Image (tube, rainbow, N blue to C red):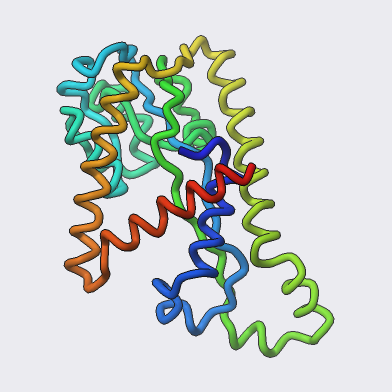
Length: 232
């Protein structure tokens, strides 16, 4: 539901500030940023996806649980392939496509082998930049002041702006390589939304097994996403 990585990064920083889901895990660190990387299109090597039926049987590189659940619901076959191995698997037709973000596709020259990119904004990868708190505490006050000034929301939004710029660069290279960039049809978008709802439920169940209230985390996140997007 985000319109940009800046919005997604704002939501992630707000989630970190408002809730204590990860505060214990990070208690020994100085948190410089909690943000998002650029969004993930649905990219394929030989087939443009025009209807929900076109998803059936597609072998797609995907590693994050939410995206894997979504692809399974759509009828795809998720494949756990490392980033360095993705190019070869696409080139040799072992995989039919991948769920990599725009920057990742550009960085690993995947536009050489990918020919279609549905600009569906499927997901945004979370990222964090942490500093050892003992190292921070030993720094002189003037350097601490600089880190303090440039950390937090400032760093999150700066990261979002960078990733949004990288999307433009990646799409330019895609266009130069003859890649077809297209929007999902209304029918396909409805299928994506339905699959995403199932993915949220399965991810929440995973969190429950880890001792968290998965449904509450999802509800908090969706409310934060709505708050951020409506504020723009």
